[in-house]
Length: 315
Ligand code: ZN
Image (cartoon, rainbow, N blue to C red):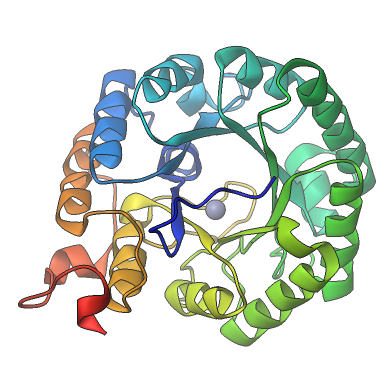
């Protein structure tokens, strides 16, 4: 099933900082700080959050407390709690923890797939099929999303052909995935490409076309989100303070900044359900939990324009 957008919202902003952000920085945020950060994100009106990855703590010590973090997030009402799972074992643990939704990374680039998960893309499709079977048997109401990484280019391989992305998307839908989104893992996308590829994705898999996950590596994050919006995308991944990157994509830094993305949409009269002033306050617990870490965001630094009100009055 596609992500459900509550009726008054124009777009769904999916906050991925607690997963994409925290797993990309060297420091580990203490659990108590993560919980305070989640509380602050929830208070701002965020409706979907990627709270962590179910991966062995040996590989990602930053995520060792993921089950506890999930438990806390599930106690907060009115949002979708999502976790990343790279394989069947992770999916078993995430479903046992009671997450609302699973997201699985699958690389469009053959080289990135081998480097990241030591599996070919075909082997990943087979793994996804096993996760779908588990979900169907044990938690049929839990949607499964694939975030297709390196869909717009790969630091290892270079260009990734549109045809490869579309082939992989249709394979994933064939094995039962509910949504396939496209990720600019390495910050190589441009708006013309984003528009072209999301339109083609919708033509290929219809309403199962999912979120845009853009990075700001070359400053095009917001432009790429706008291009995706114009191509019909209504769910956008972003991370507070632009925290994040990909440890397996050298040089890739920074998700699109949630604060700037929410400002862009609200200024255009496209409702996000998120209160900007409260969202800015969520930077404090993030910084408290990661002292000295660089965070980004032009809107929180500049402040809101005089007489700015959220919603259509600014159009
Ligand atoms: Zn990312």
